[in-house]
Structures are given as C-alpha cells and as structure tokens.
Length: 344
Image 1 (tube, rainbow, N blue to C red):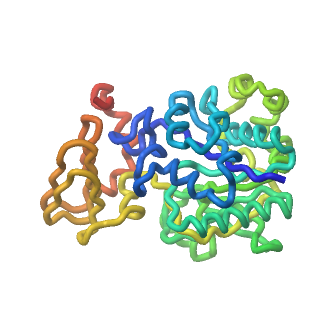
Image 2: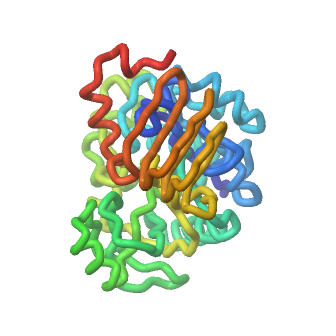
Image 3: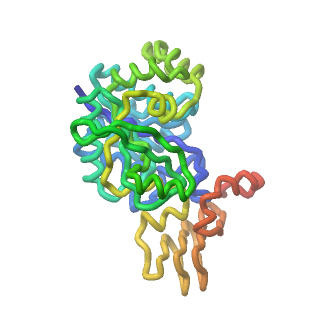
C-alpha cells in the first residue's frame, strides 16, 4: 500500500487582488511567510508523503509556474484540468491516477493555499486520518478545533466514537450565523478544514454509491480519457458529492492552528504584527496606525493616524478598504470596469 497526496492548486486570482492575478493566484503568493503557500504546502508533507507521490491539480495557465515552484515534484505529477469542474471531479481524477500506479493506494487531499501554524502537528493529524481510512475503510475528514465562531467556515458535528480516536460524522453544517456557530463550538463541533483521506478503493465505491454526478463517467477516466471525463462530468464539490451523502464517513480532530487565509484581513491572524498590531510588508511607513494590513509590492505606502485599514499597492493598482470589508473583495471586483481591474 502506498500513500499519495492530492493538492488542489487552481484559482482565479481574485481573493488577494490586486496582488493576485489569474496568472499568480493566492497559492503562488508568500502570504503567510517567505515562501508561497503552495511551496509551504508541499514542504509540510515532508516525512509523510514523498514528492514522487504528490499530485498537483491545476489549470493550464498555472502549470508552468507550478512546476517552477515545485522542482522536487515530477513534472508528470502536475495534472492539468481540461476545465475547472470543482473539487469532486478533480479529486476523482487524482485518485484514479494514484490507483493506476497502485490499486491499494491511499490519498490525502488538501488545498494548496492554507496557513498551518505547526507542520509537525499537521503531519501527525494527517497520518492519523490516513490510518483511520485504511483501518476502518471509510472516508475521513480532519476537523480543526475552532478558536473563534467564524461564519465563513463549515462545521462538523462528531457522532459515535470509533477505535483509534476517530468518530463517525453526525452531520455537516455549512457556514452558520455567528450565534449558531458559537452554539456548535460549545457542543464540540469542529471546523471543516477540507483535509481529507481515503483509500482509492473506498473512494470509488462511494463514488458509485452516492456521487451520481461523477459515477457515470468513471469508466472513461480509468481508460485514461481525462478530457472526456472533464467534458461530460457535472461540476460538484467533493464535500457534497461524497462526504455529505456517504454513510461511511469519519472525522479525526486536527490539533493544529489552521486558517484558509480567505481575505486580506486574515493576514492579521497568520503573519507577525508590529507593536501597534499592523501587518507590514514591503516599502511601508506607518505612524500612529493600528491594526492595519499594509502591503507594498512596488513603491512606498505611507499610513498615518488610521485604524483597521487594508492598503495594498501592487501591479500598478492601489486598494484601500477595511479589514472588516476585505471579505467583500470579490463583490467589489464585479462592480469595477475592466480597465480598473487589470494589472499594469
């Protein structure tokens, strides 16, 4: 039995505009440290899953840069989606590739753009998830112990205990309001991180059993017709196609700090701050500024007497918003004329 990693590394480059672009989306940016998030993700697997068994799922426009960032990963392991069809089809393809190499393969699936505060703790939890998947023949999700009532995350309600520290999943709750999130946390719910584990055999058994959008197209995929598979398959998230429908799902508690780094405002949680609570990157001067995110990729940025702002200078564009409103960046971009969205 061999163990494989499937890393989802697509994206449209809108979450961290104007620094991110369609050619350099979030995972290719050094948002949580010196290295891009994608590089951190693969390094984090060291000692658990070898680069030769690491599959990166991405789009055609990102493939070359992905290979440049990850020279240790074999070029053929960068899987280029013919079209974006969400995580269900993408992870089905990666699992088919792994099982084609080893029918007894296990797969650890994750996104390329997370922050993790303790790599060793991550590997321990990921290893536990793989152990449970292999021992109990179930799909496994890793639920992170919450640190706040975040309305941007889904939650997992654990059910009956299983051997080895895992529990059955009672149900999933998708992005509750603040009051409900607090109630869920008090009752022992976990954040749904999107870190999954399964054996290829169980994944395909559950695909046939519950993933009606994907199952009819598996035969072609197994024959190597990825283009036909992506042409015909219905886009769907693996959370929905498999985890919310299957009766063979377990959860392992992940005891590591984790953030999906979904907005500019999230950087206050994942980067070091100065004495006034500011995240400062690049050629920036701040005086009597507090709790701001100040990022310059070109030219100087000066902030004076402000609080809770996000100021980003990159690609010939300056963005000024608040930490709170940075969660609405996608909606802002939809209202802008094309010439204002395009980087210089």
